[in-house]
Image (cartoon, rainbow, N blue to C red):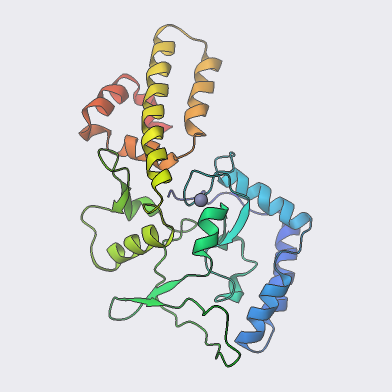
Length: 269
Ligand SMILES: [Zn+2]
């Protein structure tokens, strides 16, 4: 999982609509009513959502890849903070990303905080919600999930591109940061799904092959437009974390060092 761009903003018109809907939720007196209103107003399809979807697509490498698994086609607006726990974030632009069904479905409204003892505190609502359920606002504690809209997941998580192609907490991080990394990998099932692990390994080979091809074309005097196109194909490929990790660790992996020594410009792609 990579950090998402922070420079993509909504139009004034969309911001006005979002505020209107959000206000309708926030002005409800009780927390329970806010959750119900969030549920009721969410998903009203209109022009604002066309814009939101198009902006989320821009954020997803323009190829509509899921921001969590980087593998599947994503067409579901995911609330990073679930709207039935945080109704005050239902119509907040910074709470959205594009996720695929296989990521969004199982994650659903699973959510946890880190309590004052440094342990996970699960605040996932029960399903179905019993009639006598008491709705209580979550305490104001550090959330466990790493939020790629405001944080840089690559400071917490690294991808093992040498052997396992699984995500692991960054070497050297400890305590709450490590716990958050483990929780995020776990709740998004980034290692659990074998097809993702295999796809990352395939992407690794594919990135290397494309880079070799680029170096050959460049050395044979290919036109700038052609080289630009090859660069773009690398930048828009799925499993962008693999490419990120190849760049990050190239000094320590002989075959990558050789490739990037020949094409140091690719370190900026
Ligand atoms: Zn996904």
